[in-house]
Image 1 (tube, one colour):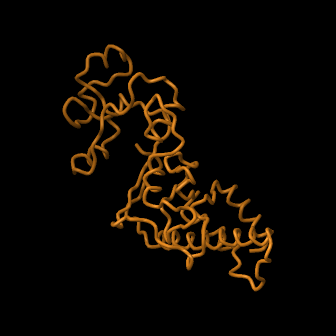
Image 2: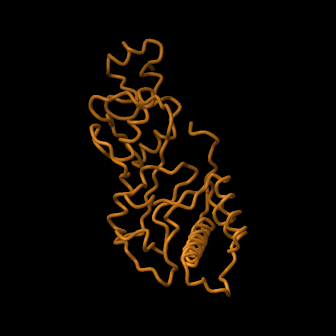
Image 3: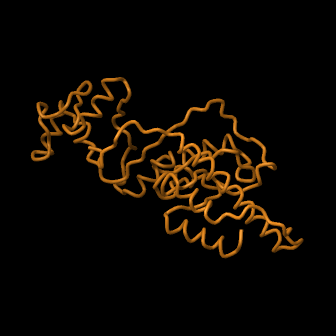
Length: 252
């Protein structure tokens, strides 16, 4: 890849809200070895909703007197809500969610949190992302530790397929390991492929010089090749997908 093209790609990735993390770094495919021990091709989809969701008016504790005492204007009456389970009902706009529950496709976990909360949104988010106790500060995410356990020599050796893909989000702490962030970040499903495909120059007839600069050049070429391969894998998987449902503009 020419220097100006490399800079162009990096700039475009920044503008698109996309980054090439250490997930895309490492050796060319022919020099890699498989390090993962996963015995299944099942995929976990994590949907993280950031923001100020009103949990008490999502899963409504309709049998709890305190709910009505503390929320004289905000509380919902049972007749205005959707049945769910036991002493809990759903917000009246969550009819699709109710249907999923009735089909056995979802459930809900009450009381997720930690004792004696410090009321800090940011600290509480870190505890959620890392899985630490409230009294401990961890720098690694629960998914990052899980993946690094199965890919102990990552990112020195990277697998043929991406370990994790983050869509339209910041660099999530959940994917952070001690060595690297284990998830590729994409602005859209085809953004990485388009950027790399438009700027990628396959190979070079000029060998890297035997110098410090040559080693840096080899490193950049390795980044280029690995990222190009991953972009193709992601785009191929995207092209195979078929959406049979039209999704609304909101979650309600």
